[in-house]
Image 1 (tube, one colour):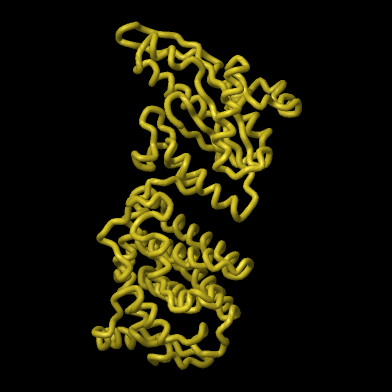
Image 2 (cartoon, helix red, strand yellow; image 1 turned 135 degrees about the vertical axis):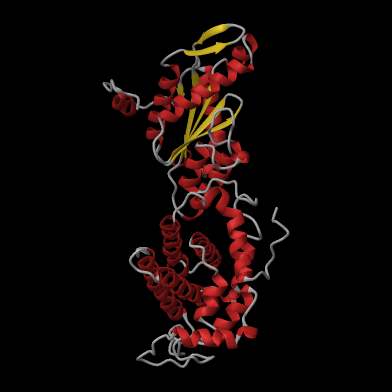
Length: 442
């Protein structure tokens, strides 16, 4: 549920504060300024698909909201007061021609900071407040993407704006790489370039209707609020507790995603995180072919362990199994505790690769007895095995969210087949790839 302190008519710094409250505690607290900038560039590059290749109105709106969100995240990491940076550079006039409606012509006049500072003071009573008002100010200053109305309203105008945004990203990158021990004006330069980049984000918002005819009259505030609405657009929580992509899932595996997506007993991501991840894969599946595999495993006769001993012993077994499983995973392979004695592994790979990984995990779990030292029984030695089911989008011909059910059914087949095995069984080729590998485990 969205926090009621946030609303669509906030000022710029309040928008930045909202994004900070949502994403900084769990997603961005450990990211450097270059990490966040890299993600900003990634989101920007991905926007070209929606703006030009597919002309997707919904995708274009989401792109605009996300680029603004990451822009705010970078400003937060750089400790930039966005409103102050904008007003220093754009005190309701074009910073080059000093006109309320840009009349620049080549060659462009240089920017004179002292003149802008005087205007910022004189025009302080005209300073915009809400995000909507800032966008209107930039609309009034710039009626064309180059400062003059020389590009007719069209997708060509969007292309020129997008090109200028790319240029500004390059200039922001240049300032971020400066050494403040050598260049004393680094902070001022960064603020200046961030203000320019933000101005082009507003320009894109003011011209979005040339991709999405229904966007006429819709503001950046509308677009951002429709996507975020005061909370994470995926998990609908503040702070965000979902696991978006590799970074989030890696944090989840370390217990850093927040309690609602982390399993205390095993240190793995939990069932809620699994559903978030699968949902994100479903969204990707709508746009591109996603080669995804789900491995379901259930510990054999685990109930007997709890019944014969106690839950302390059962929890120790779960932790050991989780550790052995985790040791077999590499980048982009994620393990979840689904609940009870059931675990799920999700990998972006084909059926054969998933079966091979399942076999590695099966052998790792069964390789050595699990020893648990208890206060009442002393040291207990337990032979633990697991049964596995594997499902793949290509082999099953279904979307990612259906794989869990299919893998669960295959796991039931493994139980009926005698336990401690995989279904479907490894193909001959897959089995051959495992033969002769004495250094089997990582």
